Length: 361
Image (cartoon, rainbow, N blue to C red; front, side, top):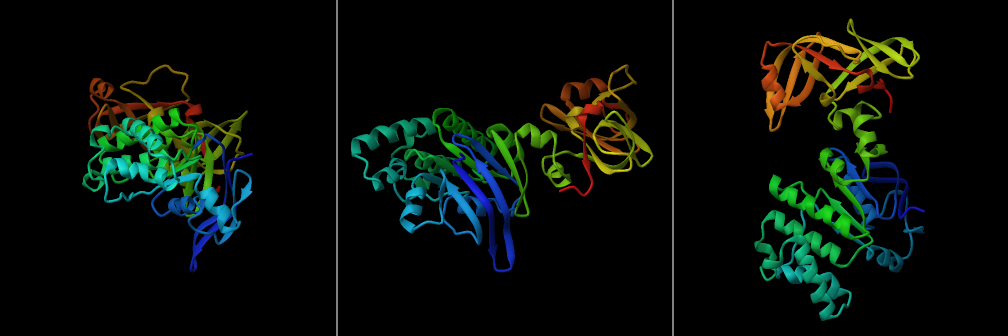
């Protein structure tokens, strides 16, 4: 039995549908990431799961218990969860007292509080600032205090709403390290909302893609990022090469796709005549200065139209009669002298092409 289950969950404000028929199951101890663009409904769903708001329609089950129960039971369930807001609030008191407040409200003894809070301060890296007023801290430090306060009560479920959205890269990295430490140290079920798809990849066991109030795909990060269900998911998870075409042949699931007069080979069950989109991740394309002998079924000569350095990688845009974007190491870009106007061969395997039926949901 799932720890949390939502059934046909809907939420509307006036005539606007924020969430539409959300059916979701999260297992005990699982790290589940809700990824989606701003305004997709992620925060609304977290608020419903935390029982802050009541849904317009549908049910939420916590450990098998229907949460549309008397207020006393709902309160008991809420006390088994902690919610860290995107812009957390800290009280006008010391870091130590902020972290201890939930324990005090639950009547935990002073000695136990001191022992627990000291350990958590060490975990979040704030031991030396324990006596500072929390309102004097930086954004990243405030987020760490909020997470520390949330885990101090040892919740069964930790809800995180865009935990790094307002932070600089260094602070965001520290928060991710903290979340990873919590995952390894506690048997806490974590549901986190993020618009950062790579963060979902790094931290979550499973991902749900929420777009326009609907979960349109769930699965492992590999499933979602390499086999997007439709074009909306492909666009969101960063598949930059999405080309529309028509299947013109299918020989034992090796299909040929006509893309404006050029053909791409891929692996697919779709029949001849199907209108499809061919998705190729930039990192699955290799570049060379001459045509090489390879088992890869797709090789196109093209001209570099742009090359941009991105740290250890270089993003290369190529015109092959259709546009292609690929990622190569900075070293490879230098060795190939990739610059505007350079002629190169772009090669990728048929197995590296993910085929989506156009108009699929």
